[in-house]
Image 1 (cartoon, rainbow, N blue to C red):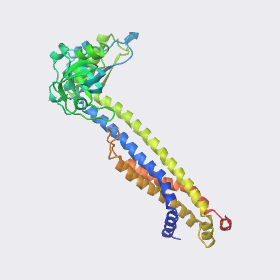
Image 2: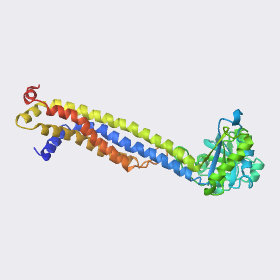
Image 3: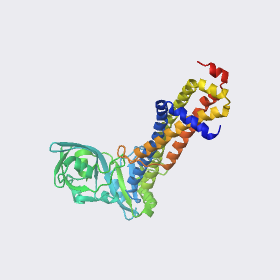
Amino acid sequence: MNVFEVLRFAVRGLTANKLRSTLTTLGITIGVASVILLVAVGNGASAAIAASIQGLGTDVVNVSPSRGGGQGSEARPLTVQDAHALVDPVGAPDVKAASPVVNTTATATYGQTSYDISSVTGTEPAYFTTTNRAVADGSLFTADDVTQARKVVVLGPTTAQSIFGTAEPVGKNVLLNSIQFTVVGVLQSKGSTGLQNADDVAIAPISAVQNSLAGYGSLSQIAVQAASADSVSLAQAEITAILNARHGIQLGGTADYQIQNSEQLLATRTSATETFTVLLGAVAAISLLVGGIGVTNIMLVTVTERIREIGIRKAIGAPRSAILGQFLAEATMLSLFGGLLGVVIGVVGSQFSFAGINPVVVPSSIVLAFAVSALIGLFFGSFPANRASRLRPIDALRHE
């Protein structure tokens, strides 16, 4: 019996019970589609985060508070004065600008509309340049607004639309936690990473935010812009020297702040999302394993139902290899069909966004998932196929 005859018998065996064959492929289909989709979502999240961080620029350094303190002393909070001290032509010639940042949340109210803003940022005008935020409508607030603690606010496009709808927001008054602020501008869109919407923000003078919304605790961070991308390392060293002196951190002591540039932040976030993607892929692989077990169960049932057929074929001279090949071919064809269908579903499904994340299909995940589906057919089909090929003709013919 040649290969074509083995395949012909295998196809006939599968089509004899179309419903069972279709249901058997579902486990493989779901598993392959899950692997492709979840890996694509993980890579999409990683790409979005990378784009968001790189959008800040390669010359940005972030200083944030951390626990600890030099020589056992208490940790000191980051202050507005710390931020201003970093802009020193003598002590920090490689620092171009430093903006104190306070982050909080607030409920915005305009007329009958109420909206929870996920990020309300109090800062100074240099923050817009440092973080590459440009105004699309109206204007940004000024240094005089900060000095006078004027309650003015610049909204992200998502925030503006959620509060005002199609109405012109500039010049309107909005209540933030029942405190009246005047909208002076709307920012250009920067998009969403899926994990954070950069357009759902409200940015106001830090003095107004501390007076009315956040209080006078530690800064959330200090956004520092280096003189150039090439001088980021020098700027970090200068920042460290100034803050160590101001916070009393002795040589060898533990700093009560941490410094990260955009490249370090990107590496950290990328590592986290890669781990996340691996976990998603592992979860999806479990469904492939479950699909393989389903193939084994169905093939065992198929062998049991066709024992008399096997006995007749062996009695008229069919070799053991022909029986083994037929059932292995059936199991493999089921897995390949399920794998092919899973690839189609996975690729089509990855064209849609999930929770604001645009999936990025990884070709290697398609090849790997499809190859594993074929191996599943061979591996999980080998036991029932081997069992069928070992049946003695006389025992098979006597089977009821």
